[in-house]
Image 1: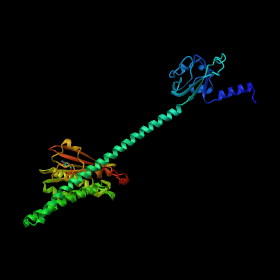
Image 2 (image 1 turned 60 degrees about the vertical axis):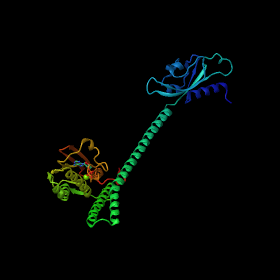
Image 3 (image 1 turned 135 degrees about the horizontal axis):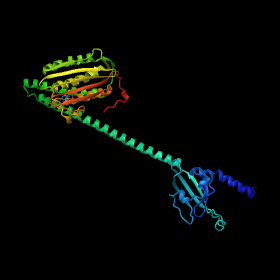
Image 4 (image 1 turned 120 degrees about the horizontal axis):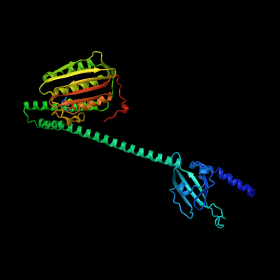
Amino acid sequence: MVNLRDDFRLYKLAYQHDRIGKAFVDRQGRLSDANPALCGMLRLGPEELAGRTVPDLFPDLPWREPLEPLSAKCRYEPPAGEPRWLHVHLALLDDGEGDGGGSPAAGILQVEDLSAAVHLEEEIRRLKRDADTLSRAEHMLQSEKLAAAGQLAAGIAHEIRNPLTSLKGFLQLLKSGSSSAAKRDAYFTIMLEELGRIEQILGELLVLSRPSSVQYAKTRIAQLIRHVVLLLQPQAVMRGVEIAVRAISETAYIYCDENQIKQVLINIVKNGIEAMENGGTLSIEAAADQETAAIRIADQGIGIPPDKLDRLGSPFFTTKENGTGLGLTVCYRIMRNHGGRIEVESRQGEGTTFTLYLPVEGRPPDISRDDPA
Ligand SMILES: Nc1ncnc2c1ncn2[C@@H]1O[C@H](COP(=O)(O)OP(=O)(O)O)[C@@H](O)[C@H]1O
Ligand SMILES: [Mg+2]
């Protein structure tokens, strides 16, 4: 059994070693006998704390006189360092035997440091906000993608329905058997044209869907351009357009899928020829440094009005009676897959210049991460 003196010593030791900050408080709120834990939390030495009062240390607390028990969270500004969050608890020292036997201590203050928990809470709130923002962005992206897919589908349906309707009409006419041989011939010609149009639209859409096999190889730029010119020469001649190939180094090359880049060049050169209603010169030049190759195709055609410039490449945007509006969509898509880009400059009535930039050491795209939009 412990005697009274041992008892007192033990209590005192426990008080000194308590991890909860403790001090006695008199009726005016003055502190005495602060334990080391409290001094640590408040960043004040025992002498600095002696005589300080609860309302002066914790101005946020609802302090009342005469003394009342209290238990509240409050912010504390230490003399140096970050503000801290504390839980302050004040219990009255009233053992039911009068007013504390004339002792100056009327209450005991117990303080816990909540800063770590508050920081954690803040961190969790911040993370939650970030997560919310992210999921909203993802949601928007998803609905935007859906909208784009829906637009594309609507466009395809529209584009294909027209030739189909006319095919149906001609078939009905032919079935009725009332047309002359000459008329029948004319109908067949139109029907073949309409079928050709559907074929063309589907062919271009096929390129738009994921490229199934991309074959990257070292490809000489000059040779690429020669092929394209050879292919389009007849169309150019028919329209009175001269294709002028300038300044291309025979050794300049790019790593690319030759067929796809050819397709880009064909689409753009063809657009250039089609833009020159009264003939003119379409010039092609190329240059390459260690990293980037640039191929420039300049026509002397009708030009593109500034308000139409950013519609270039949108599926089905066309100003031509027989256009599909898919040519540039395919071009942009292929160029993006090659890590390249297209720049367009145009002056109405003077002409348009398309510049293709491609990385010399291109790499096949990571198809699994390819964006279908
Ligand atoms: N070189 C150019 N000069 C003037 N307009 C152009 C040129 N290239 C493209 N365009 C405009 O962009 C539109 C879309 O081109 P494209 O995607 O190739 O489809 P399409 O040729 O079937 O119309 C064209 O209809 C035309 O209005
Ligand atoms: Mg075109």
